[in-house]
Image (cartoon, rainbow, N blue to C red; front, side):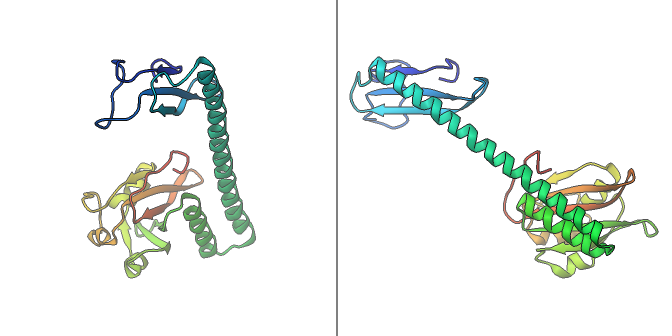
Length: 231
């Protein structure tokens, strides 16, 4: 069906070599499959299939009607995706505006960092996170604010040498680091972090005036994937 890029009608599944039943003794005798195309016809969003227990069940008119319905269904799917994307962008902009407003209204660093972390977790929908800042005199990365950690004491007292661990590498490389479960992660500088039970994590370098000044990290205790726009 994906190769044909058009409706496929099997009037008698018992005699058509294209038919492959997924279950033994399937009662389906005739089958109609229709691709759900995007508006530009350059992407197949899905497949609509209609089964019937009678052979020769569908006429040419039936197929045309089903194709018209498939076109409408594809448009509805695309509209729903567009709505989700618009909402996502609006949420991201609202988060950025909230952080900007905090920066302009307060000179307190802790307030700004707390707002930034809260909004980051809100946007990506993760349960825990932290913001670490570079201590240039000590050549360390120090957690300044954190949320949702199971090991609160660990988060409150964590110091990393620049270049060590995942966060330290994010500072040195200037690139976002994404990882799954930390259970077998060999790049950890603090072994106790394995006991946190993190199943997905992203660490993003924070830049100011052309240099990395800290790291924003978000974590989940469930297996998760990061969409490119979230990163």
